[in-house]
Length: 333
Image 1 (cartoon, rainbow, N blue to C red):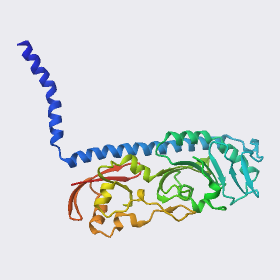
Image 2: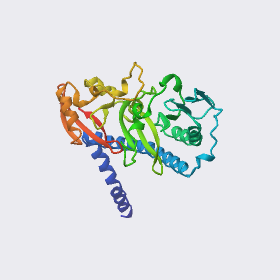
Image 3: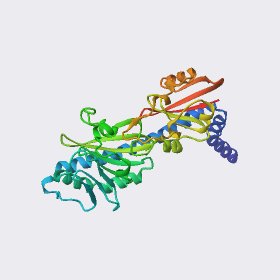
Image 4: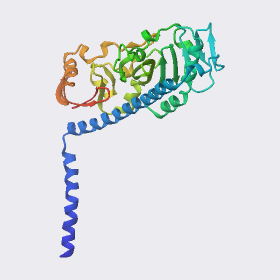
């Protein structure tokens, strides 16, 4: 009798687990896809939040340091690590650490050199941040002196045009200026073609201030092609869509099934001298197929719905990435 009670007690403990397994096996594939998609979206969101919080921490420290520093006491002589051109443009030699470059739009005089020396004190934090964040392709500071400091370093002299105006050329800078961002909030820049050659990127850019003096922007570039490789399931029909219905990246099964263009697999061949927003032709809202246009509209209103595309019937599951407002989308037959 005692043994029988023991057996029933054991089965009583195991029964909920057995039922859960049986129910999971009987679950609608679309339900399972929706749950998995939600987990993918949360994982991507956490990575984006880490990327943003990292640049905000560097931004805050830069602001505090400049506010507390008496620049008159900082050496303003020529930095031996840098090569100068006619007292305007300069670049940091290949001596390790971050790359640095000035466009030469304004002269690099003694006052500018003092600010650059203070800025160089943040080389290691930027390096550490970029190395610790797998999402980040490039981390940088852009200043009101039209000076950039960045990691990993690249050949800025060859790649970037002389005399460029940061206010006009670089969206991470212009969108965080006081006129554009009076609330001093970190901005997620809409997808654009990066002037430094990294392809299509999205950028988190945080304005840096010393008191009420705007110093510039601290930013990080995130390559969409890498986002697709890392966070989309290659064996599923998935895509990542921004708040304008722009298809940021898509898996091969989805591209085979639907007439879509995704930024993650497209690259430009012409050189660009300024940041340019991604072409609107990649937006679902502008797709020539009416059913795809309807898909692009509905996914911003519903988390799950049915759609017919190219004669095939699908269930569409949608999960939001809160940090950017992107939508992670999966189609299941």
